[in-house]
Length: 486
Image 1 (cartoon, helix red, strand yellow):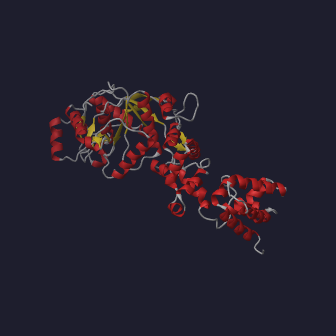
Image 2 (cartoon, rainbow, N blue to C red):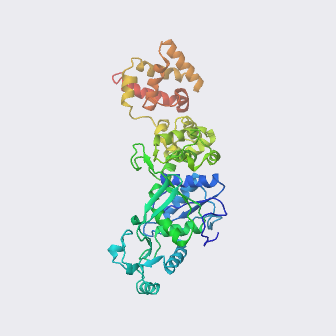
Image 3 (cartoon, rainbow, N blue to C red):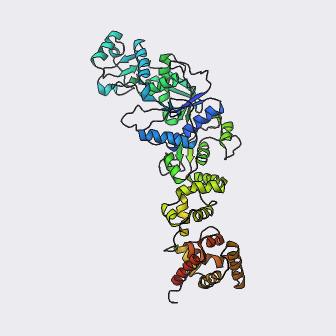
C-alpha cells in the first residue's frame, strides 16, 4: 500500500473502512455501520479496513479496543488487511500514524495553506472565529520562529470565507455548507497532536479509501474534511451518511431502547447471525421486502440504494423474534451445545449432562435468547416454593375438580409399569374421559403443581423427565395447600 497515494480512485477497487474510537464498547449503531461497510466491500469485490482512531489518549483504553475487535470477529465482520499479529491481521491504529499526519500538516504550512495561530486562547478555541490578518498572513519565517519559541500553538487551515462547500452525499443528496459556518479550522492542536478531522483525511487518502460510510452525526465534519482534501490537492472519497438509529418511540437511541454493547447481546445468548440480519434491516430495505438472509444473500442483495434517509427504529422484540427463528433452525446437537454455555452452574452440579440436555431440548421452540433458559426451565431443578397468584386462582381455587385430579392421577401414575411419555399421556386421557373432564382440566392443575404456573413445555414430556416420584411429591404439596384441613 502506498502511504503517500493521494487519489481516492483506487486501482484496488472499492475500499471502505470502519474507524471506531476505543473509548467504549462496540454498540449497535457502530456495528451496523461496520456491517454496511463490510457488505459494500463484499458486494463490490473490494476491501474492508479496520482503523482504530485512538488519538484521544485520556479516554482510549485497551479494554475497549479488545471489545471492538472481539465484537467484529463474533459478528463475522473480518477485515482484509493490516499489520500481521499472531498469524492474522490486526487493525491499523491512528496513533501510530502521527508522524505521517504531521508530515502533511507541515506541508500545508510551508505551502501557505495553514498558519500558526497565536491569538488569545479563548478566541482561538472557536473554529468560526475571525482571525487577525497579521496572524493569518505572517511570512513563513516568522511563523516558524513563533512555533520554535512556543510549540504549544495550534496550526490552522486557511479557509476562504463567503463560499459554499458542496458535495453529493450518496444517501442524502446534495449538501451545501457555507465556509462562514466553518472558519479557519484547527488541524494541529496546541498539544502538538493532529485533530481528528485532519488525521482522518490523511488516513483515508493514504489508505486509498474510495467510500466513507458513517453515521449522520459525522455530517458536520465532512465540509471541514473536504477543505483539507482541497488544500492537499487530493481527490476526496464518496461520502454516505447513514441515518441514525432511534427507539420505537422515535427518540434518540438509549440503553432503554437497546443501545447496549454487542458484548451484552452476546451474553444474552443472541446468535451473531440473527443480530447481523436484524441490524441489516435497520434503515435498509431490500427490493423484494424479504426479511431473512444468509450471509451470501446479504452480499448479493446489498446496495446503497436500499438505505433510506429516515432514521431506523431499534425494535428489541423484533430482535428476539429473529433470534428465536435462528435458534429453531439449529440442529438439536448444535442447539444443545450452545445453550449449555448458559446453563447455571448449580444445575450442572445437581444433574447429569444427559438430563440437562433433555430439559433444554424441550425449550428449543420457546427460547428467544439462550440466557432465557434459566428463567424458563428452573422447575426441572427445584420444586416451586410459591405459585403464580392468577394461575392458582383460576386453575386451582376456581376448579372444583382440581383436588380430585391432584390426588387420583398421581396415584394412578405410580402404578404404571414404565413411566414414559406415551403411557403417561394414555393414562391421563383415559382418566379425563372417564371423569367426563376436558383434557386441559386434568392437566392444568398438575402443571401448576409441578411448575408453579400455567405455562410449560408439553406436560407428558415434562412429567417423564421429572419422574413419577417428583411429580407425585409436587402434586401432594399443592394438594395440601389447596385443602389445608384434610
